[in-house]
Image: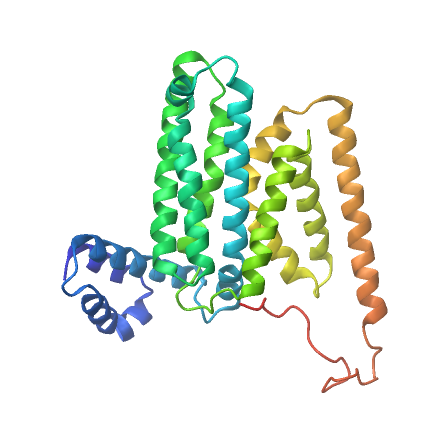
Length: 317
């Protein structure tokens, strides 16, 4: 057994390792028999990720793990849209002053666009049920994005540019790559056709909003996050609201940086308006739950007891 495989097995919780350690090793050795070093590294990485998921309570048998696996395609789709919008913004801001070769030296634009393409291919693989290629492509996308970020940050440090802006633009795709490995995708049911089309539609809508509607990119993410946070007020809407907040994770870094640059009355008014809308939504959600909940002592339609079905169950995966 190689050192990498031993480390991957050691990352599993001790009780699980004692019970299933030998079977894990046998399964990996069987899967990599006659294959190259790349396949061995991929299987070792997958086994290590499995152990870390179990330690974090994100296994496929746990509701959190199933919920995370269900929302990863949406998070990856939003990451592709956000990263592409960021690259378009870079090109629009500097195309009159810099040639494409200078853009490459300044921002690593070619590596950044390669990261967008690789992430889009990872999304296609994931939506068609090919988890291993999706993770490989997502990892390659993360590496290309990190390369682009290293080029841009080194240039910014040398020329007193905005390092935080570049780091914020790089962080989202890296978070999406991490989600690909954090979710138990191999052990959860794959996305259906309806989910696939919904993810594609959401990604296209996000690209239009983030790139084409002037000034809306930061507020779209902020307002949606506030509305989803309002959905946490009621147990019935809490799983979906929490899933939405996690799915938006790749868009938070750049939105947070843009928010930090907003000043004055416009900024204050927008935050107050978004917060007020979220509070009103929370109140309506809470009241709607009270209106639809069965009264004490009366049997709810279709329920087995006085209170009907329980709330707060896991999201379908």
